[in-house]
Each structure stands twice: as C-alpha cells, then as structure tokens.
Image 1 (cartoon, chains in turn cyan, yellow):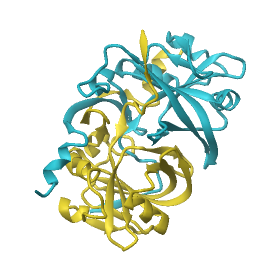
Image 2 (cartoon, helix red, strand yellow; image 1 turned 90 degrees about the vertical axis):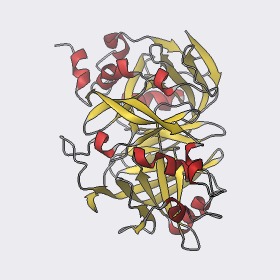
Image 3 (tube, chains in turn brown, red; image 1 turned 120 degrees about the horizontal axis):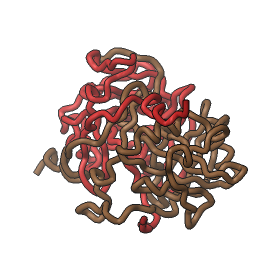
Image 4 (cartoon, chains in turn brown, blue; image 1 turned 60 degrees about the vertical axis):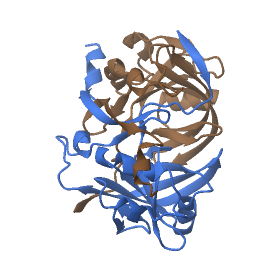
Amino acid sequence: MKKSLGADTLAYPLPLYLLGTYAPNGQPNIMALAWTGIVSSVPPTIMVGVMPSRLTHEGIVKNQAFTVNFPNSALAAKADYAGLVSGRQHDKFAELGLTPVESTLVKAPYVAECPVAAECRVISMAEVGDHTMFVGEILDIKAEEDLSGADGGLDVLKVDPVVFNYMGDYHRVGPSLGKSFSCGLVYKKK
Amino acid sequence: MKKSLGADTLAYPLPLYLLGTYAPNGQPNIMALAWTGIVSSVPPTIMVGVMPSRLTHEGIVKNQAFTVNFPNSALAAKADYAGLVSGRQHDKFAELGLTPVESTLVKAPYVAECPVAAECRVISMAEVGDHTMFVGEILDIKAEEDLSGADGGLDVLKVDPVVFNYMGDYHRVGPSLGKSFSCGLVYKKK
C-alpha cells in the first residue's frame, strides 16, 4: 500500500554529472548537475536544468554551449564540492586539481579527469519553474580508451559513474541485472 | 587521453523507468523509459522523451498526463519487456502480471508493484529531434511505506532502482560513496 509524499523530485536513480562552461570572463567553470536527461536519439540531445542565478547559466547563455562530464566514483566528493560553492568566488578546477580541456567543437571546457564527456551546443532554452531548461545537441563524446564494453558501447562498470540521491548518499553502480533490450524476452509468448 | 566517439547518447548513469498512460481507448499502458530527467525543483518537474509513433505518445497527448514509475531490481526484466513490444498489440500490464492503479490527481495509471511512482500533468511539449519532449509537473509521489531513509527522504538502497546502459546490461545501485551536499566539504579551505 502506497502513501502520498506530496510534490517532490524523488526520482530513482538520478545521476551526478559535472556541467562545464566558460564564465563570461573566460574562466573555466564546473557545477554539479543532477537535473538532466537524454531527450532524443537522432540527433542525440540532452537537457540540463540550471537555476538562473548560477554563473554556469551566464556561461551557457553567452557561449550557447556546455559540456556534460560523467565523473567516476573516485571523483564523487570533488563533484559534490562543485555543487557547494560558486564559480563567482572559487576557481573550482584549480581548487579541485581538475584540468579544463578546450572542446574541439563547442566553446566550453571538458574535465580531463572524467572518463567520459559530451560536447553540446544549445538548441533551445525555456523557463521551467525555478530552473532554465537548456536542451543541447551532443556533437561529440570524448572517452578514455580503456572503457569499451562487449557490445560496441562503453562498459558502465569501467566508466564507474555516480548515482545521486538528493536526500542521502551518493552510490556506485552495482551488479548486473541482465542485458538491456533482451532480458525481457522471457515474458514473450511463443 | 580521450578519443572521439562521435555524436551519441552515451550518458552514465541512465535510469530505467516505466511510463504509465491510458491509451486513447482507455487501456492502461506502460513503456520502458530512459530518456528522462528532473528539470526544476519548485515546482518539481520531470521531462520525458517519447517517440511520436508510440501508443504512449497518443495517451499523453490525449490525457495531458503520465506517471513515472521507478521499478526495483526484481522488476528489471519486466520493464525491459515493456520496451520491446507495443501496447497496440499487447496488454503489457496483464502479460507482465502488473497492476494498474488509478492515480488520485491525474488521468494516468501508476504501477502498484513499483516501489515509487510520480503522478504528472503535462505543462509543455516540444519536438526535439526524433522525440517529443514532454515536461510534466510532479503533483504527487506515491511510495511504499517501508522505504524511508535517514534524512527524511527515501533510502535509495531500499528503493533498489535500476540503472540503464543502452549498449549493455542493467545494473543495481551499489555501495555508498558518501553523503550528498556534504562529502565535498573536505575540499573547502578553512
């Protein structure tokens, strides 16, 4: 029997990403990001929700670009810090010992230490509640060499990403539950 | 050193949800959903990307409502099946032994067996590439009684959600990496 918890953002699992931008003064900046998701497949697009008060917001609007970086479990606490302080007062790359790398296709830095990063150009923006919803087209994925999986994609356990839980702990990804687009075939009638 | 993988939807982690709707003929329907994410906090909103060809798309447009259901690991293969067949030919609730429950606030069914479900009313829709991006306001979260965590929220390990990996396996959530909005404080200069 379910109980009502009211209007809330209780979604499971949520991701922990780092959103990379150049601030209006040119400084590379990152913020922790959990309000995000893939929107479409062709072209590949991703939505990011950013509060208008954020320095990141100014950087996206100015450059019409951002990177989405996928920290691994070793970077969870650094990514958390990037959500606790503002780029207006802090050089977060420097304080965290992270390396901004100039993207090849958009005007936004990616994070060298993150295993995977997506270079995105803004294709739309809209006000949604207390956030701006930017939709970005993913123009390229940059990934470390040793992350390949069995099916031509990347192995999620090698990427080792972080699950966000907004009232609780970050978590690693755990054991396999079966193959996607396949394990459900057991329910198909012959 | 990173290599370029081209334009792709390689984001980590991604979720596996079930999107609940009434089809235009009134039949309760579900589909597997991974193109989704929270957009704003106040009000709480969530984006879902749905291909226009889907029966789910017709149901959302007609009723301006959907539910987002968070399957636990025991439901991963059932959720996978819900992404392999269409509600036009299959009564997926019946075939999977799942129970549609009428939402209290919107015209869309939620899945009784999922530990947590969000009742959403559509506040905007837009074409983005090959998908329609619906933004829904989360009007209520329905959750099982025994999922409470230490901080007033839900315990992600009790919810036991599924991580989606679009070229590979589904995974459970694994061990804790530290407290969100807190573990990053170790990087703060005194």
